[in-house]
Image 1 (tube, rainbow, N blue to C red):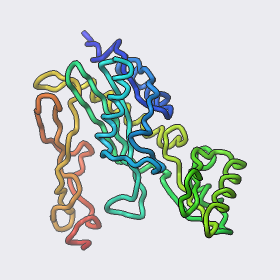
Image 2: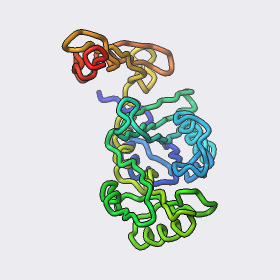
Image 3: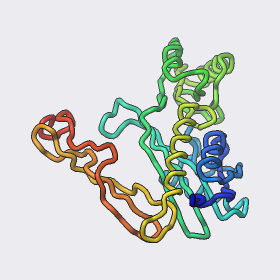
Image 4: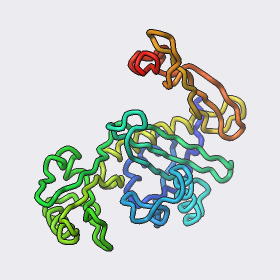
Length: 284
């Protein structure tokens, strides 16, 4: 007998203004048998990628606040929201990465399940244009025009900010207005990381949705609550040359966010040793 997945037939409030239902709708319909109800709330109040409204909470707390906004607006007991942060990799500053989060709330079970991933596949980038610089090389690098960009004067000016630029004519006009507004004619360009302007990020959200659905289909072996999965990692993978413990993951901590059950297990990729290049002794 095949058991029906939890939440089959349910309706989940998805709080987004940026088209994330395109990445997640089919994933939850096929994998969980649940329908997403789009809730277009003013999530900008929680912070914006472009920085004109600062994010006051960390990414996980912001994600939870978004989900609650949708649940309160729709009256649904199930909620879903996504959030992300982008910047240089902490160990390799020249490498840009994204931290993607997807959070599911079940009010009736008092359950919160958070799935996250460090995303290496990102076009996150920015550049400063001097008065006579061409943006073309940078635009090719970041995937314009399929990926949107943001333009502003290098010295920020009130009301002079252009988001979602995906058309050469609009970009040319935005650059001209930014140069006129900046005391030195310089322009700050950055990738628009909002999901509807960034197909690379939309694919990342879809991958995260698949991981979250798999997790919601996995009951806790102790209490049966949906959401058994990876909670933390334990560093210490030994160097293959000298055996020194590295910062790489040695084992994974899986568990239930409801009853607190925990289990330590080996890395899923089966890796047993670290490369000497990642060893603090061999490569100080």
